[in-house]
Every structure is written in C-alpha cells, then in structure tokens.
Image (cartoon, rainbow, N blue to C red; front, side):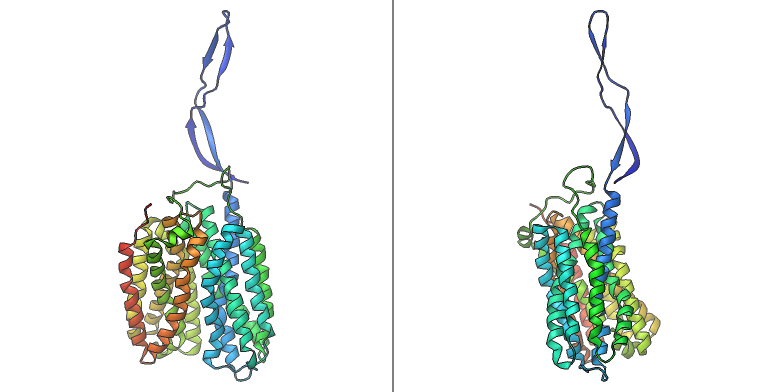
Length: 438
C-alpha cells in the first residue's frame, strides 16, 4: 500500500553473534551500524480518501446553485410563477436546517463511523432533491419546503461534517491545507453545478421542478460511491501517519463548556456573515453601484464562487505557517475593509476586485476553522465538536440576507457599511482567543 520515503536514518541495531572458541567461551559482538529505511504506508490511501471527499463535497455544494431553480420558479410561463420571497423560501429553510444536520452528523460519526454517516447524509440529501420533482404547480410550495428545505438541508448537514472531520485524522500534518481542499470542493460545487442545472431547467421550462429528478440521481451517483471510501485511519499499525501533536482531545460536552468554543463560533459567524450578506444581494448591488447588466452580474457571481472555492485551501495552507488566529484576523480585516469600500466602487473593475477579495477571504474562513477547532480541541472527537459550531453558518445564512435586504432599502451603502463594521469589530476576538488548557 505505502510508498517508501527517501529519508533513511542510522540506527544501531544490536545483533548478537555467538562464536565458540577453543575454551568454549562465548564472545558477544555488536554489528556495525545499519541503515533502517522508514516506510510510511497508507499515504496513497489517504489521498484517495481526500479525492473522494472533494467529489462528495462538490455534489453537496450544488445546494448553492438554488438560484437557477429560483429564477425558473419565478418565470411567468411556468406553472409556479412565484414571487421572490416564495422562490427563495426552500433554500432559506435548507440553510437553516444545516445546523441540525451537522449536530446529528457529528454524533452519528462518533457512534457509527464515517462511512455509515456519510452514506446516510448522501442518501437523505439526494432523496430530498428527487422528491422535489413531485411538485407540479404553485400549490405545491410545501413539497419544496419540506423536501428541499428540511430533508435535503438535514442530509446536507449530516454529510458535510464527515469529510471535514475525517481528513483531519488522515492528515494530522496538513490539517489546514486538507480541510481547505475538502470544503473548497463544496465552494466550487455551485460553479460546476449551475450550468448543468441550467441546461436541465431549460429542458423543463413549463414545469422546472422535473429537473430535480436527474439532479438528485446525479448527486446520489457522486456521493454514495465516494462515501464508501470514507474509513478512519487505523488507531495503530503501519498505516498511521505521524504528524503534529494537537494536545489533549476534548469530548463535545467538554468543548461546549469552554469559553474558547464560543469564541471560535463567533469568529466563524462574523466571517460567514460578511460573505453571505454580500452574495445575497450581489447581482442587484452590482447593477446599482457599478452599472452591471444582467449578464455581467451573473459572470461576477460565478467569479465570486470560484474565488470562494480557491480561498479555502489557500488560507488553510497559509494558516499552517502564519498561525490560525493571525490568519483569521487578516481574513476579517480584508472582508471588513472591502465591504466598507464597496458603496463607492463605481468603477466595474474595482467593484469586481473588491467582491472577489471578500469571496476569497470568506472561503478562507471556512477552510481555516475546521483545523483551528482541531488545534484547540483535538481530532479524536472533532466531528462532534465542530458540527455544532456550524450553527454560526446557519445563523449567518438567515440573519445576513434578511438584515442586508432590510438595510438595502435605504441604499446599499448603509447595508455594506453596517456589515463591514461588524466584521471589523470581530477582529478583536482573534486577539483574545487562545487554545484552551486543561
């Protein structure tokens, strides 16, 4: 399984040679120093697990491409013809239910292992999407809320937490980078999934919900085989990869009793709030502030998604060298300052640069926080510890868009300056947040 690492070190391996002489005496000698070549079996296997995690997260990340369905449900020629509020409601419910799923997923992973938990989340998520195809007209909004919002939202949360926690156990030496790569797949999911969904929705213009059937089946085809590869590294033996020590491991109950857990959750909330608030009004804000037309605003939204995905592994790797809290301080400052500048960015190129900077830093927050939680509380129970922390994501997904929409009624300047100020204020927390001590 493993490959030979080209680092050999000398070790004196005493070997006893017995040489009887004429007097029947026994002479004991020690052999010359020998070269012992150390192997690291399991390295190729852990990269297969990482690849499976990326595929798994790409499929789950398609949830953020809801805007494709939302736009189709608002078309006057469809059997739905919803207004903006009703067309957004299933997605809002799904984001709110993610927290329930991550909480359950962390505990399922503790009891039943990564494979069972991931396959459960994948099956629930895909089944909810497939069931959305049963909706046929405007009266079936409850089907979309129940199936996409509640069922798929919970399945998304259950599945999302598994690779994030699992890869920290396989890569204790690269936790920041590898968790960034994993959640980076989630960030790129809508970028890759939106064109596929758009083509399917175009095929079913009158009843766009028919597109949910092939989308759900495609998600199942990607997630279930990938989840089958999710296994924990052996607790001992030749496949264990020796990495950086994370200190003592805390159980979920112990972590939730610590001040540091709530500080990390608040930092994550501030980082998520900045990005989600901007994305929720990006297209109309781009038109109002910088004069973007519909096509250019759509292209900018796609570019923001790419930068969000790239920022996750990038800042996850940076945090390995610069330190977790220093990295978070930089991420919050970038997002805060760029949001403060956005209302005056009337040049389209400057507006795009600021939006992409916010997206890059926002993705970096999601890529860095899992490794930070592992540093603070250990990786033995990381799923149960980090899962509840994603309540920050759910709260930001609900509070951010609602607050921004309300403030934007007075102008996007008010909305962006308010969110930017909150983000900058949260930078103070990075200076007082230290790893807990027993």
